[in-house]
Structure formats: C-alpha cells, structure tokens
Image 1 (cartoon, rainbow, N blue to C red):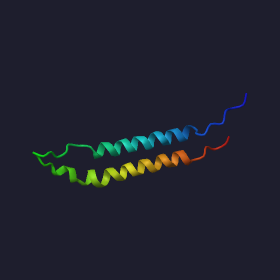
Image 2: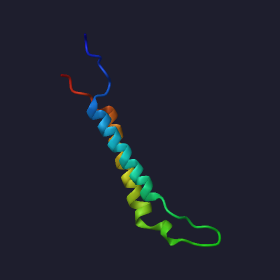
Image 3: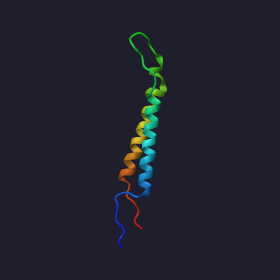
Image 4: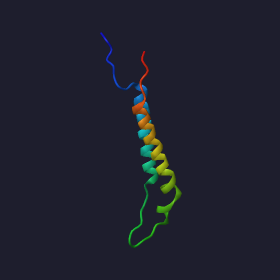
Length: 75
C-alpha cells in the first residue's frame, strides 16, 4: 500500500499548536478589568496590555503562518 501524501506532517501540527498557545497567552495578557462610567482603572494603559500582549500575539500569528507555509520533508 502507498502512504498517503498529506499537506502537513507532525512538525507542522506541533508548530500550529504552539503558535495558537502563544496567541491565547497574548490574549490572556491583554485581559483584565476595564473602566466604567463610575470608576476609572488606570491599569487599562499598562505596558503589559498595550505593548507586551500585542507583540506576543503577533509572534504567535507569525509562527502559525510559518507552520502553514513550511513544507514537510520527503522521506
């Protein structure tokens, strides 16, 4: 029997999973309590929320794009 040629191999799926986990981590870093009309929360402008978390998400999305573009090695 011939082995089916799949578009992705095991490494592609691992890279996709790691990239997705990094994106989820970035969104978790962005979360927190917000300000309302009655109370102001200055934490909405923290460096973690407006600088670090978007960069973490960007790195995750770029790694997912790499995982999709990467060609599996032929055996």
